Length: 372
Image (tube, rainbow, N blue to C red; front, top):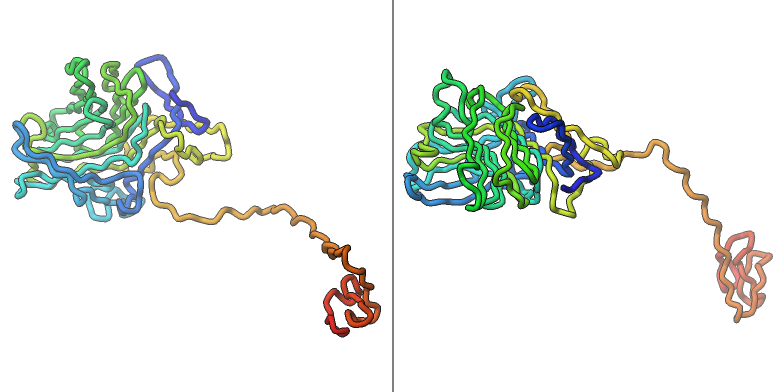
């Protein structure tokens, strides 16, 4: 595991004796303040189509327009500027599609060099039945770590707890029954924002919800670097997503935080902690042990939280060093092959006397015709 001078400290692995993990890099996104997806570079909206297959009644169509920014209207409330729940919205469009595919959306991290780490997302799921949503790490179909949500399971809030679907995709050499875990949580994902987290090390994957341990497994642990994805879709398959939803369905994201090791040797690890002047800086990453409230600030450790920032000039040193001493005027260069001229005593130069003004008390400029 790569350790770095600019590292992030993750504490609180409750399933083993106290353990500290050091991660060298960070990706933090404050979705509550994202105004325009075109003004950031951490996430890429995906466009792709999958036709209907097997028991799916419809295909899937991931579109740009179904990823919507809805930043907080003010810092004292919990309403977005478009109304409703604030944050990044990923929508599944309602009704039977005319083109044969249900419109959804997916965003992928621009970084695809993440190898082990702690990954967390603040999210409120839809209350519209008929969609599947996911927060996951992905390299390929046999190197994947998922937290998945089926909204058809969240239609009766009086029957808590609810199930999340925790999935690891590995190769055929691993028994698939060891890689899938329905895990109950003491809340409904559509009730409000909650933090979903997985920690990935070379030996294990561990899942949490609001800091509560859900599942710890050592089976099928991925070993290849990749990136993160958030998506929301429906294809009408009664055995999985069901749907499509009767009304537009939204997943609302308030933040994403990733603390990880990078396989990119050129990654800029400077300024990762808030005290970049300290070459040994280590930032302690706090655990989220209760539902994250969008009306209260959450802890971000990176300087700009994924938001666009205006460049500014470097600060002025209040005690600048004194200027260097002035260089003395260089002595005139004399060509030793020419006869030496006398310094002019009477402000004349050149002419029959052959005087020179160089070095005279009146300056070094005069006419070669005998006058100034």
